[in-house]
Length: 332
Image (cartoon, rainbow, N blue to C red; front, side):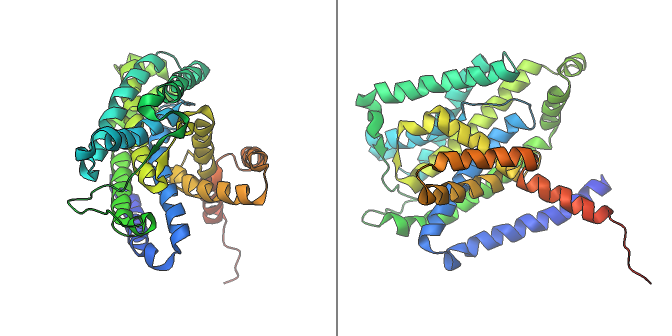
């Protein structure tokens, strides 16, 4: 325990330093890049939830875009049909509740299988959400989507305020606090007995059953928790983007979630966070460089898998470990 605590202390100070740095970011970053960074932070919250399934439970989902859309549409539809509830302190719990219901239903269907069967089931149920968002156009706005108005925040109205002013002010600090809380909660989950049980299931399902772990139930819990984080990311993203459309529930966006997690490195806890932020910028610059930006993204993924399968953070950790193991050759 003493060694573990000693290892956690440096990481705590790194997290604290990063949090303080983020608080001062609006003073140094241009507004456009700040909004882009906020979009990356919302994806990072989502990626934390996705990696709970991928790394810690051993389940690859191609349907998390739908759970992201549930959180975003919960915000949009509340504003559309229940304007009196359009307060951010109410909208976030509503988005979490909607994510809880949908992820429980989807999880009950999907966790009965593993490996490629789980991935295909997750993809199939996500396309049901996508189809509903398209077909129920009288409710969801169809392919046009729903415009997201600026919410009331803790009693303060932002009517007449431009979105970029809202995003660079109070909302930015709220988003950073939500992101920090999400990171702390996920750290607690993966280091708890529950998180260790998930890793046991991932490594050897038969052995996990033999020691009394209810495998299917734990997978369902992991799926629900993953859906909650993903839905929270979608809710926070909706305010940044200002508009939600069914495209975020489509399989292509679910593939992007997988990409950003692999980019950062799913074997390192902080990897999906870094990957989500980097992917936001990578996609933007790819789109501005060429109309074949999807080819460029795909080529980057192939190179990443071949040359750096551990992702950026995994490769960095590996490099640091090699440097530490290298003996000094200096002459005394």
